[in-house]
Image (tube, rainbow, N blue to C red):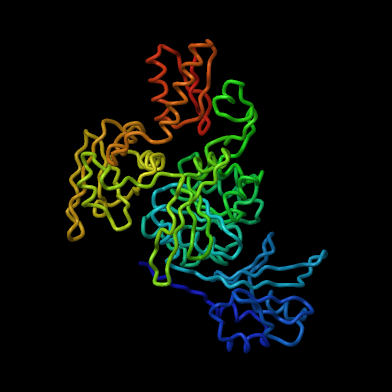
Amino acid sequence: MTQTTVISNIEELLAVLPERALTPLRAHPSLDDLLEVVIDLGRPIEARFPGGFEYVTEEQATADDLAYVTARIGEFGGDNRAGIERTLHRISAMRTRTGTVVGLTCRVGRAVFGTIDMIRDVVVQGRSILLLGRPGVGKTTMLREVARVLADDFVKRVIVVDTSNEIAGDGDIPHPAIGRARRMQVSSPDRQHDVMIEAVENHMPEVIVVDEIGTEGDARAARTIAERGVQLIATAHGNSLDNLLVNPTLSDLIGGIRAVTLGDEEAKRRGTQKTVLERAAPPTFHTLVEILEIDRVAIHHDVARTVDACLLGSRPRPEIRARSAAGEVAVLEAAAELPGPLPESEVGGPLAAQLRALRRPDGITHILPSGVSRSKLEKAIRELRVPAAVVKDDAVADVVLGLKIHHRQPSAARPAGRPQAQQIAVRSNTYGQIYEAVRELFDIRTTAREEFALRETEQALKRVMDSGEPVELTPQNAYIRRLQHELAAKHDLHSDSVGRDPRRRVRIAP
């Protein structure tokens, strides 16, 4: 159970407003719920609340009122947004064609701690996550809390790309709400994608947090970041996955859509028309979270499979989670289109009993890499979709994954009642070895993705043997490509990998 804590710094916003608006606002019984104050030239000053709006002055706002506010806030950027130093408040300007400010929207920015408990288990798995939701529903608030939790609680190298200073506040020193996360400011909105790439190339982040991916350049930068093995957590314009599917600029975030013309035999086998829609590439984001309300979310755990199902005419049902008034998080609806976590009775690997004893309340197994690549381990966790997180401290590790040639004594500094971490050894620091170790740890025999890839390979082998023509398979990760090569070799057929990640794929020929 998690209780949310709200820090609004409301007095700092009131201090920049015209004097005649202060008295009625300070005396207002719903001041704690204030959303924004609107000052439009020639109209009374307006206060907006969740249930509606009220005029807080009888007199019309003047040019002096607008000048009073703009003189007490930061500089407006290229997006016509400004802020108040060391706060999260945002002031947006409306201008005439000549550039004169004739309207201000003074939005209250609140740091809300405890908002990510609904998706905490998803965030710590290292998978890239896209947050969607209507304006004002709390996307940026949740994004800010994600940055703080990953930086402080999980000691990740987190960089916030802050285009409008909404995540970390105005001024040179970021707001404490992002914790240890570092903040890179963006000089103008059209440079956001450049700063995203700069963050990866110059500062070695493990996680990049971005608010409002909205352009084709942003989408390309997001894919570049994901391909480099960096966890990307971002928001985008749109209320749901359906919005992204029909958005030509942002559909690449979930794999993109292309029209494919099938042969007569393949169309007959599928039972479809000859021209069908298919996902064009692996999605940039592994998981998509639709924020329905501040205390209610819908989670698509596997974006690739969800998009594929949508294109086949299905209506996948995401997992619905909600937080009660008491702070308890519950799953209201399970995801219908995806398998859930393995039931306890089905976990029967050699470490199953130890894992059950080590299991934490959130169900996440903490794995410490010792002499093996952290990035490869995180990639294996993402690919296998297992409830695990990579940690850096013996004292909190449930499992230590290391090389056989090394022997690491587990730390004696364990919390009371916690058994020592289990030791797992691999022969070499290769992705295949690490992937297999994680599979064994969670007793995963064959994933749905592997089953699909191997069925596709078997069909391709038959086509090559029948026609003598080469066939290219759909893009897969390195481990699955190795399985496809082995299957081709068993049938005495030639195979090689072509293309570059994430489009690298196996080509089978006679």
